[in-house]
Image 1 (cartoon, rainbow, N blue to C red):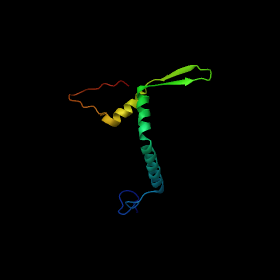
Image 2 (cartoon, rainbow, N blue to C red):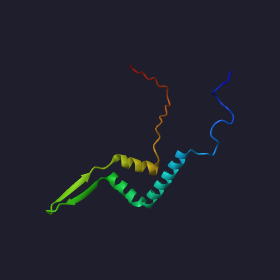
Image 3 (cartoon, helix red, strand yellow):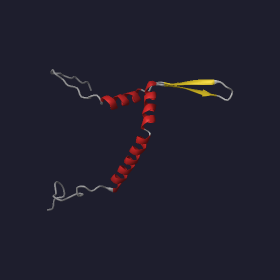
Image 4 (cartoon, rainbow, N blue to C red):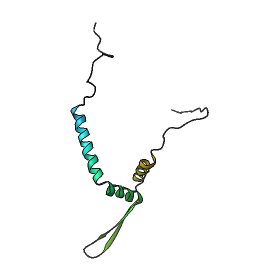
Length: 104
């Protein structure tokens, strides 16, 4: 009787080889990184402005001015802070015995 599962020495893809879709993904990622690096200052400025909130004016043909306000984007602010200070720990340490009662 022949076994089909478990560890088999020498089985699988050789180490150091990559699939074609992995290579395509890496090429796309490298392209995106290069494009973002070229525009990093305006991107970062736009993110900071979005986190603070935006005001802008629109002039109509008749000369009237409309002022628009975009509320501060808290998700953008949180993202920027996490990039600078690091993402906060999401684990909870318990120093005493705790009994949890769960009603189902």
